Length: 270
Ligand SMILES: Nc1ncnc2c1ncn2[C@@H]1O[C@H](COP(=O)(O)OP(=O)(O)OP(=O)(O)O)[C@@H](O)[C@H]1O
Image (cartoon, rainbow, N blue to C red; front, top):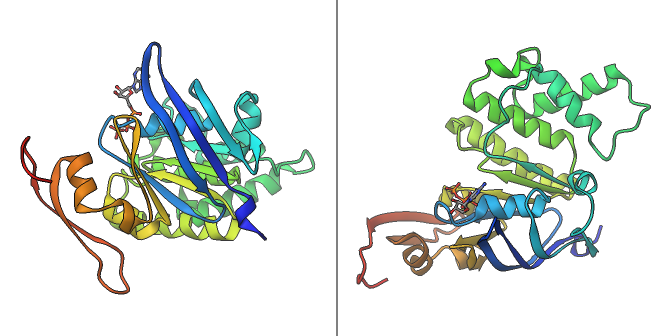
């Protein structure tokens, strides 16, 4: 498969709320199928706004092309079949069991046909829950889950849709260390196996550097740095974008080691 023809191209994307512009002219290098990119940046930089704009959940101008086809102007239902967004928190008040919620997600998958019986869908839903490591929660009500369990079930729901583009907004923020690692391994493996384009918002730059092919660093609604983890995460970008003095080491055969030493005050050299 030539993954070089299956990318997501974002150019001159702007978006905001009412009259307040948040994203200014975002242009990204093509994000290729099978690759994982992380979207990083300080609080309020516009990361979630960008994810929502890519998913078609937020008014935007500019161009978003998937496999050469323009997504802007298409219906939301058409876009959500191709691009699936996992928000930071699951909507509250959904009175479904975990299994039913994943079955509903499977029904929304582009691969779903009416020939799929209820038992086939349930079997498939169990498989997805097992891959995420929460099969034992299948019969629980969504209301009764802990924050971390909700995050894992939310991940199972988006994976069940088998999207071409998977947008994950802080997918490990509520997870313990073991589940963080499991989720990162799973996302990485699925991107490779299913040729998905994955973009995830992460605050932990060490995790982002370890698990990403590329990094997009946003600051005040603009792209501040972009490239491989080593290109995008440097003492200079950390000083300019995050306002911290930091060291970035490149141990052989390992991912970047980032050590934040101090908060910079105005006038400090970068
Ligand atoms: N629904 C909304 N209506 C108006 N302004 C909003 C809305 N959602 C976000 N904003 C504003 O847009 C800006 C960017 O917010 P966004 O949530 O995209 O940032 P973020 O980078 O994801 O932040 P964080 O890391 O804190 O989650 C912020 O100034 C925020 O106040």
